[in-house]
Image (tube, rainbow, N blue to C red):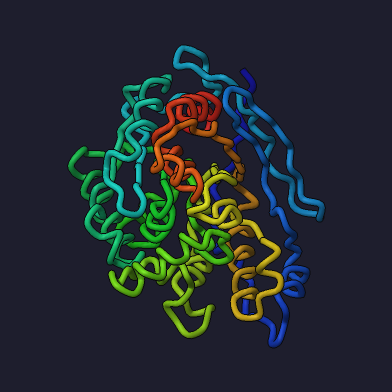
Length: 363
């Protein structure tokens, strides 16, 4: 097998867009920052039994990306291409569930990973449960604090403070934001040099703006109004009067994604719960013509992506097989895009294919 590409995690302070220019339109700001629709990174597609590989390169001049790791079939008995961990060292995998989720949501991913890892004795798994009762009411700041305390307690209970040489996060939906919030907490500061791979399964990194699903918009509005779901208010960028004072914008300015060696953003156009551009961290045409949130949206994209020039940034777009069913509930789930959102957790064909193809990023 080919030698996987590696890159040292960036240690410099993340670059941000700075003060937004007075009166600048989103399109003018995007041009000033050198951003374009489609974003940067490498694109791969997974579709029901076949692998579509597309090398996506930015049209503008940019620092050279690390050599890509082409996805290939990986099994536990095959050489991984990476040097093994030193004796007595471990790789901690943290799994973070999403909205109204629980610690077992990502068990399918964990089971596939545990089955295929070439050195199983070095792996340690934390299935996060600290936010099971809080995703519907608490803020991302509070849930990030809960996750940071949970990780810290797990390290101590398993005696991993010194032996955890690598730490990776696998997150679904809201869990992607919770993990980013947790990594800013002082409890996890000692782990920053050891961060290895961050996998986001349909995470709303840019909020819920510009969604085309009216039913989801109505549901978000109802939960915000009657259940006081603070995290949904933050995803709507309505937790402050100015977009630049919102939680998501503030998070983008001090983000820790650049400390990871590998960042994999997994999305599906069939998932209409989370906007496709938000899961892929990319600009969208609607933002270019939005006088209220457009400039802040463009700036968030720049704030997050700019420091990732020293990381392996990979976009994986998934096409799930349509569900053939006569049951009304299944047809409704597919129509509103919920099926694809849940398939990231439950479809065995996807989980097997993804872990096999991208195992080199996880060892």
